[in-house]
Length: 254
Image 1 (cartoon, one colour):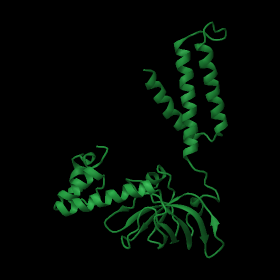
Image 2 (cartoon, one colour):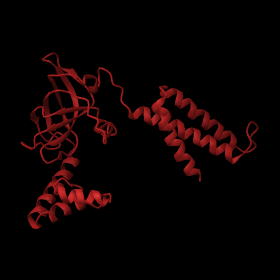
Image 3 (cartoon, one colour):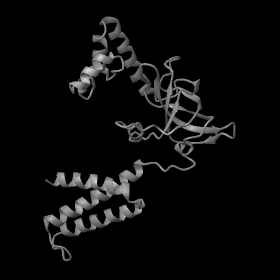
């Protein structure tokens, strides 16, 4: 039962952290109070507090609540002049950065997650920058993980639809900016983590081998089940999985 209370306290802390603009030191102080109460109530021969289980549980929940609020505060970036999202809505922006995740290949375009290290606006001075941009570019030429890019285009806020918020979806992954079909130049390759590069290279070879040995759509289905890549599924088969609620089958975690 204590785990249930602690879980509730954690999510309550996340919620409070999202609506209360309090410094993390305030929440750390709250956690400190909870630790003190917990220690006093657990000590033998405690003078100030009785050794009561409800008090100990309440103090533990208070600590977890404060930690949840701190976690929310550290997960949400500060959007200032040093963060790329500060320039959302700006035209003629040139960014340089590194592709930090496996490219997400769709039917007509590719999503690249680019960790930005510099920005140049309208031909001005090049400034150091931080943050991640979702770059939607054409499928060819092929751009791999670990490529350093120079990207010029319009920096946008991710859109929000009536039934699906792409903005919220990306924000949960720490992405607050989007560049759709910009001018992309590869200025270096193989600049990423060698371990990740080896993993993605193995995954690509495995996908190519499956495509050679098994016909479609079975190859795309097996690729989704084994490698977690469902981009090759025919639209009708993908829709059938969604309608029947069986999309977990084509995910590694499923």
